[in-house]
Image: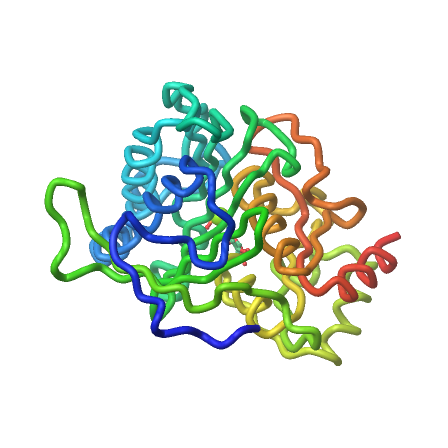
Length: 322
Ligand code: AHM
Ligand code: MG
């Protein structure tokens, strides 16, 4: 990885993507909106660790924090010219966002898929969680091949945002700008700390979701090998666990389970955006058989087994699951 460049500070929404080619302005506006809402979401979490009393379309209990993040992101993203629809893990149906194309020369209209608070069960125990974003150049459901950009915010000890597009992957630190605000909404300061993020060649960590007795035998056999080679790092939030893999090299999986062959994670909101980021960073992503980005969804809330990380580890996994 390249050295962090602490001198690359920039403020507010005229931020330059740093290292990326001149980006499509709609895609930039989506990540500006995600960055702008991040400090607000973070600040709102202390009072929102409780259940909201509703379930999401996947049948999971929705926390007050999930709802707050979903509403804030929904408002900000549907207001962007060039966004045709907003689709969220917390909403049954897509929200029509107008469908206009962006400025001259841009693509779209885009469908923006969001997991507003990934790993929100960590709210109760105060561990890491994040927001996942996929920008698709097609209405959903679509395959990951329609992604033009993807990324995530990680709410760890500091707030970071990782953004992948055609030109590569960058990591920014996002902070509330104490002097900001005003008519243009909340101001944030964004600093690129990695302009060209790539997976290290030598993997160090792994994290696998689910209970071992629920894993199929072939995956358990693979896991036994990996345990001897890498260090276990599992935090219960895909965004945090994948960010460790991007930082140290390794593999993250939420595998197929004996009684849930589709695993836990959602293709449109979680697996595809994460696969896109990891592949742009030089890694690989599979559902056990094919590249995640080639998986054909039937509905926007479809689940899929997800295995992402260093290419060599994913190739061995695919051979083990054959
Ligand atoms: P969520 O989006 O409802 O929070 O669910 C997804 C999360 C992932 O972040 C994480 O990898 C997984 O669920 C953890 O599940 P488990 O609690 O079974 O380890
Ligand atoms: Mg999630």
